[in-house]
Image 1: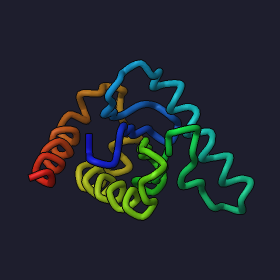
Image 2 (image 1 turned 120 degrees about the horizontal axis):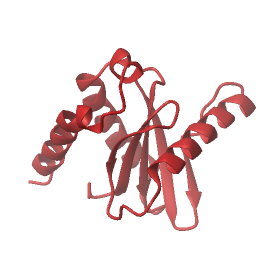
Image 3 (image 1 turned 135 degrees about the vertical axis):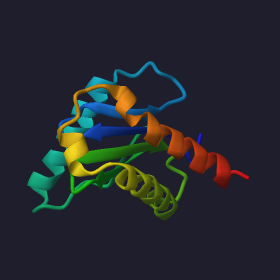
Length: 133
């Protein structure tokens, strides 16, 4: 996909799926979103406000980055062998593109129609196609 990122999701702070770029669509996005939203909230509560930024499950690393002042969560799945700094740098680029396209009110007032995010998906596709040249 994006060289070091295998899969990418963006969820609302409540765990609703917004955008996905996945090799295999066999994962229940709603369940996944609820899981990441809950784990992010849980980590804040047990660590005096600090958020979990990544964790490893077997052979997958999940990196979590907040967007739009915590109104959205970006989740990237990658190989644990990739350096954390490199993954976060790429995640921050994705968040920047997302935040240039939307603001918090867009997410908070979103009616659930996924086509609302098509422009962002197109921008992200274009960015990664251009960076691969």
